[in-house]
Length: 433
Image 1 (tube, rainbow, N blue to C red):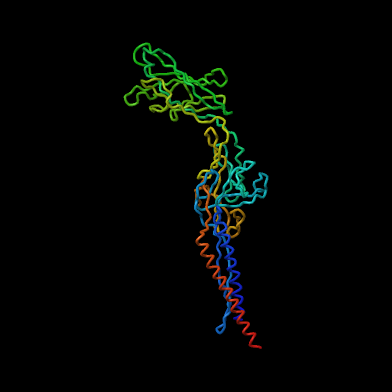
Image 2 (tube, rainbow, N blue to C red):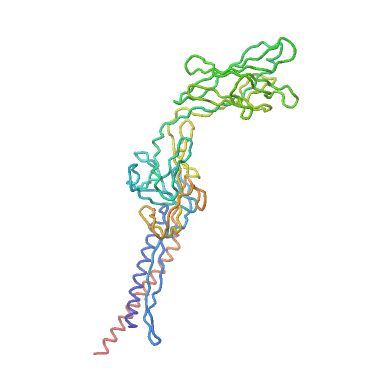
């Protein structure tokens, strides 16, 4: 039995080192493959029960697995949708069949990095056919009701559905200085006009005109009071949409700041805003808070619109797409407007090394990996999402070449065992002659 077991041990050694040679070959071949995780071969001895006076060689068995939990270095690229997880976790992806919006059995795959770009249908996918998945968001960038314990609510990220975008104006800020001398008894009473741009619901640029009229006293001290009336010009004919009076302080500490705003029921002391009803909807106009120097002021200087602000944007054409550290897919338009259209979560499993390897550096869930949970990027145990970056292979060429030499020596040594056993058996057979 001892000679026979020695032969079996040698044969098993050849098989084990052949398996190790295969993993080394894979590692070296994929040393420049982005997102590749190094494969490792472990040897375990097999022990056969031996008696006091005899010993039987048990040989060796081999187990190969992928070190999925290893993190490669990140390298910068010039593509905004080259993304990688900077730390623990995986990006959710699917195959071409799963990208179909009507798919009922979408396959969930996980990968640590990918070079994504829009295909002919606007889906973000890698050249190897992995489609990035995320949660769609509403117009405010908020998620609806989603499940984080599976991929049921994930869908393939499609960017061309937002080819054109505009946002109506909802907030305007009036930072205007009114000349203090205009409210003096010798003032001319001339009005001042100011054009204020805003965007309607169709992304068209519209104009609102502000008319500032000083209250001129017959004699005595300045009134420090102005009437402000706003006219909307979107219909071609100016229409008054709001009117209010502003009284300014004449004190040593807050001279020139607003004292109060009257004759407008929508004005709020807390926010310093009035509500203006325009054809495109209500707009909040900031005029200033009492005792505050922001907004409309009255100083002994010229009429000057020093800080006019507005939100909203005109119609813009989709220019590019970026993914920020929080996983927000942002559509960027040629007007400079940004809109979040998807949120990419980061997947985590209890045992990453238990994932089953699939094509193109992607992995499938298994019983050994445990159940998946989707975190927001940068939350919990998972890392942030890094744009303009790809993860390098975790292969170390120097280490693999060293292992290659060791494997070659081990294979030769096992072959020598077989050769030696063969010679011993030959000698045993010659005894009979």
